Image (cartoon, rainbow, N blue to C red; front, side, top):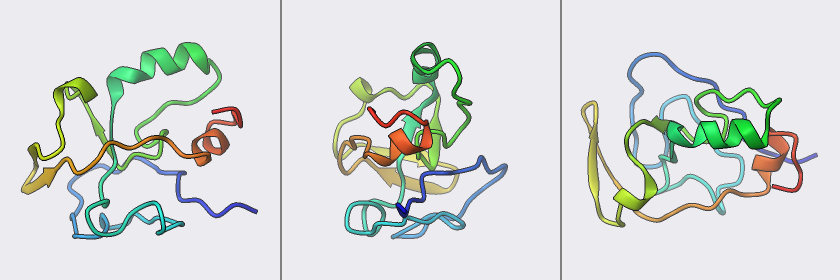
Length: 113
């Protein structure tokens, strides 16, 4: 059995941002996920069209890639480490890029990912 918190569900309305997590969100493996400066994992919805072609049976909804913040109009080439963004009343800073872990393959039923 693999411990994972990659199965996320969309949340309507504001969510409190804490230094080490978002309210109602969790991480199973704190060695590599979550914790200080890694509470938020953002992923652009603009990538969904590509993934829907690659994974036609996948149900792509906010959180499908393990993100706890789905963005629109904010793509990776436009973000640099140290950039700050206001989301509601929170100010978030880009700390590091993130590569998907093996658990994304589990979530999307594609072990090869």
